[in-house]
Length: 397
Image (cartoon, rainbow, N blue to C red):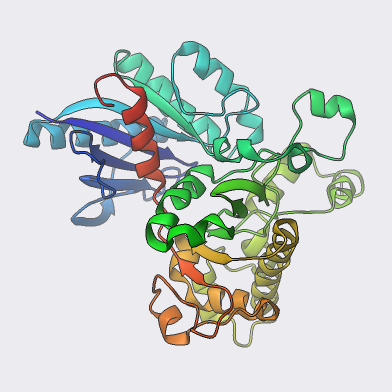
């Protein structure tokens, strides 16, 4: 009988899961089995898993999220019964650890209560991860649970990067730039030196481009600057989120257009970014296919790329130069057109792409003439979470 670690990555409308065999050392990077419940709050939720295409799944309309967790739990138990496995731990991606949690932690009632205080800082993700933790604490209280925080990797940021230009009292109350996508960046800090050797330990910028997006400047494989700040709204323009925005625009919306706090929050999180500007989609693939002849889509894509180029330039200044650029996450790993446009905007750094390598999403997409290597690296947040669970749960280390 082998011990398994279940990793849950909970969003507002989807739950991704993966099972890792903790009996194998080193812990395999590829899960034994994974899957996803998608469209949880929509009319046609789906369930997909390794070896099977997504198909419709019936969820209780009154409590669809809880029902999705129960469906995953039942499928996991059935899978374990087939292989004679034992569930040894559950690891959760939790977006915000606040000013208290800088490392993965075993979850109990007190930790859960602490993490609920950070829901306003990450409303798209925090409440759903905590709902999964609470449900498991109630149904299987003896099952070890480990929370792994997206903010933790950025604990190495110097204070000058953490500070917000507000009052000193705000700093002392914990209003600061935290940074996010930390599990992704932590994985890259492990995988890049494996692939690129000591070159990855220099001045490296990683572009995590997905529905949420951010950049991280690393030196010595540690975070020294990042684009997301106090919340996951800051920095780059994203699929439905605005990114960095003049706070005066928010004050204007509330004062002159009489938008409520809830309405403004919904606009900034769900009605901005690529979707808000294009009026069509938050997915660059769909927008690129319709770009010709549509001025709004063209403008949305142009701003999306411009903001990435602009923020990379700012991080290059902070680093004092650039030794490596890395693309990761859904768009970063699979969208050659976005990578090409971003790199074209960085040609002044001596950066040049190999068009054929870029088109096939190769590991190295820069040309031989490029002064700066450009990599594409698949992220693996689930493995990082499972690895931390193995470290923290007795018997799995």
